[in-house]
Amino acid sequence: MYVKVKNLLADSSPYSYLSNGEVTGVGTVRVKNINSFSLSQAIQLGKTKEETAEIVMTSTGTPSGTSLVLTGTLRFDHPTDTPVYAIRFDQVIFKRSTAGTSGTATAMTDGTVTITPDSEYTQFYDTSGVTTYAYKASYYNSVTTEESDNSDWITPSGDSQYSLTKMRERIKRKLTSSNYIQSDEIITDWINEWLEKMTNAAIDVNRDYLLGSENIILASGQEMGTITSSDFKELRKMQVVTASGTAIAARMDIIDFRADQVFTESLPQYYWKGDNVFGEKPIDNTRTVVIDYYKIPTKLTNDTDELPQSMWNYTKSFVDYGYAQACFLDQKDDKGYAFINMANGELAQFKTEIAPRWKSGTQYVKVVSPLSSEDDFQLI
Image (cartoon, rainbow, N blue to C red; front, side, top):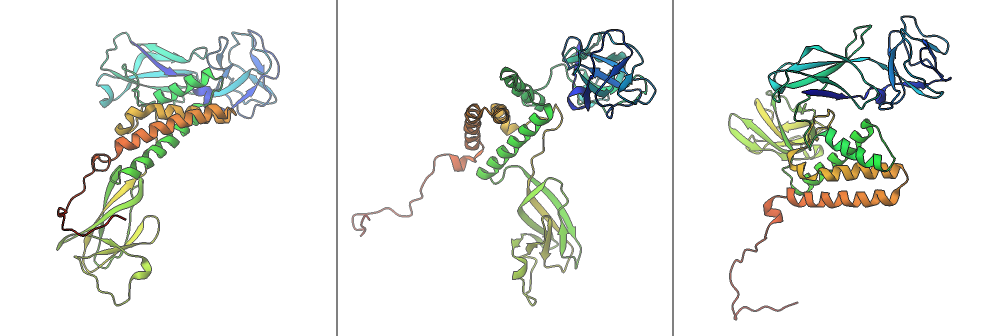
């Protein structure tokens, strides 16, 4: 069973360019700027997927001047202005869990392989792998033994249609056809921009969409409370639980309270004093304030992160939006507006689907009493 990871180090690494052409067999390369390079570091000459792209290690001496001394020699010729990336790592360690994603991934025997920069992926063949296994990978520097954090889970079934990486790949396929390529980081930002818009649209038609909850205990005499949930966006409902029972708190402005005003536990009231700080009255007894709130949508950051299930049928809108943004950057406004319109069309369908049935279905008018011929009315 083949397990593979995408070669992305060059996408986010600092880089310079060769100041002179270098030929096969040389042990020193000349670059325009050495500020991004250090000793015992992996560097990549050439763009990923190019036939002559290769990775070499710098020597144990600190780079100086305009030259990088290598521990080995070049395998290919490289012309002037070839990009040189400070990627740090030269190997990938593949790790396996025989218990699937619920287990712990440990490094496999012979699972450390050299990165293949002339390919889109670096892969490893697990001779005893089965479909129920799950894998992770980390980058490794064979000289300094430095190791990166583990990747997300890699499963034999691959990433789902609703995952960040799949939507990103679909956008990039469109960008390839238009000769306009953007980095994964920028495309991820576009996908999360559209996720925010989809979430706000859902809340607009369904006020109970994406709710969270937090319980805050206030002691006797304590008036102020703080909502600490990191995904808190806006209050939906506040309930106050005391020994007397549970009551829904009514909102008042902070300037509306009178100094002599009397509050009761059956009719609690609250006010805001900041984005997530509130005051609640009465304060005579210990009580639990139950906060139901609108959540900030969780951003997609890891490749395996998936859209909320309610958006699964609308992945095309994410792809259309991302492609439209690339078109705008490439000054292809007509094409950009065309794809924005398609994305908005998908958004409109999503709003119809997410709306509660009692809002989107057939509406009925309740007749209190029938009209008769004796009723006196006129049409206006």
